[in-house]
Length: 192
Image (tube, rainbow, N blue to C red; front, side, top):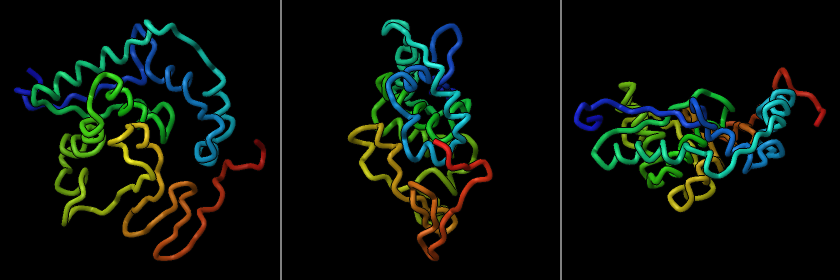
């Protein structure tokens, strides 16, 4: 029905109602608190609060893979799935949503399409965004490792191109056409 209707399905798995969202799983299985990039871009007080509230769930309580399998069925039926989100942890929650689609059985390529081209199509901007083609905006990310080999490589950003300017993916210092450090954020401090 979803495929035949032509609508775009945009689920979110980070937050679920009546079951633990995948956000809990990623907090439980990754040490994002100590990631230098995360610590650079997220205020320490916020990061400390988010990562210290650990909850654990038994393996059978994690339902997001079963829920994500319905998105896989939609894609297999010719439908269009986008990556949704609630913006729980800026910079990572979008990746976690793609990883959740993969955990539901979606191929790495279809999960990446859900996070790029399908979203651009759904909001009517596919003529400008969502894929690399002549005539489209050249805002893109360059990854260190291939996400087609492992979907979790989507978060290993090496470079960012935005409006014709190239930035280092680790610190967002401009590296081309000029070299300019990003500088400190207003909330930055030297405390760990």
